[in-house]
Length: 193
Image 1 (cartoon, helix red, strand yellow):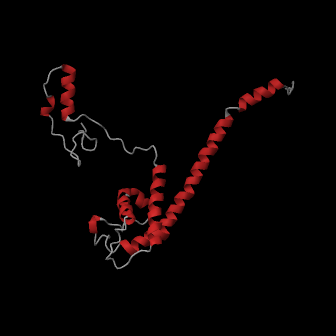
Image 2 (cartoon, rainbow, N blue to C red):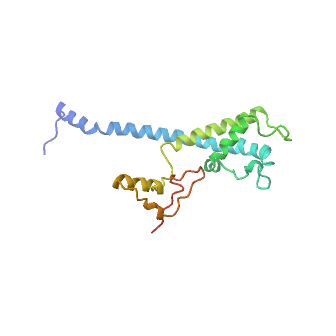
Image 3 (tube, rainbow, N blue to C red):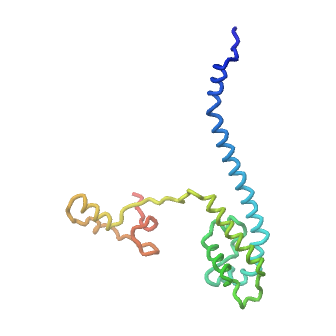
C-alpha cells in the first residue's frame, strides 16, 4: 500500500475540502452568541418584574385596578409574570403612557411612588417592549384566510365579463369589523362547506 505524500497539491485539496466548513462554523458561532446573549436579558427582565414591577403594581395600582374595582376598565391584578405582560402588551402601552405622563397614580391617591420607583418601572416596560419586539421580529402573527367582500366580488365579475350582473346580491351580507370596514380578514368569515 502506497502512502500519500505531503505535496503542495495534496495540501491544496485538503484546504479546498475544509473551506466550506469555515463560513458555516462562523455562522453557527454568531447565531449561538446572539441567542445566548438574549437569554440572560430575558431572565433579567423576569427577575426585575418580580423584584420591582409586581410590588409596584400591588402597592400603587391594585387599589383601583383589580377585579373588584376596575377603574377605566383596567384590571392589573392578572399580571403575575412577565409572560403575562407579553400576552397583553396593549394594556402595558396604556400603563406606560399614564406613568410617563405622571397621571397614575392620580394626585389624590393615598400612596405615591418615588421618582426612582416610577422611573424603574417605566424603564422596565420600555426594555421589555424592545426585547419582545426583537424576539418577535419577522413574525406577522396568524395570517387570516382572505376572501373577496361582496362588493369586491361584484366588481371582479363586472371587470372580467364586462357585464354588471351583481351576483353578490344573493349572498349573505358582509359583516363590518370594529373599525367599520367590511373587507378586513378578521370580519370576512367563510363557510366550512
